[in-house]
Image 1 (cartoon, rainbow, N blue to C red):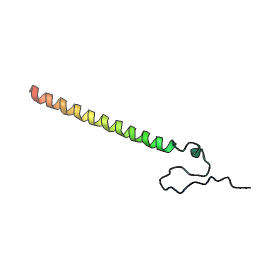
Image 2 (image 1 turned 90 degrees about the vertical axis):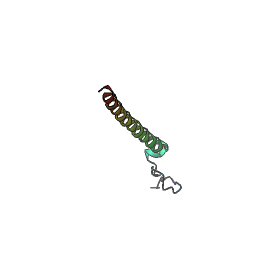
Image 3 (image 1 turned 90 degrees about the horizontal axis):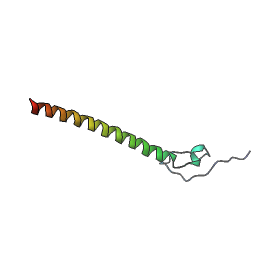
Image 4 (image 1 turned 180 degrees about the horizontal axis):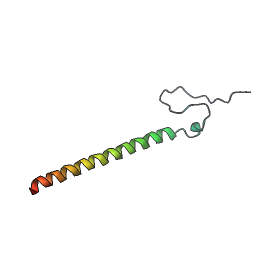
Length: 66
């Protein structure tokens, strides 16, 4: 039985394998997932920064009101 392996250029940064798997049908899927994870981390970080700033502003307003 002949091998149906798909030949790919050697790329160490590629996240998908070139053996004809489902990921090969959508080669941009890993990059999109990576961008999605970066966006999630960014949004979570912004949420934490906003929470800290809110706590600091509440603390400062309590100091002023004393």
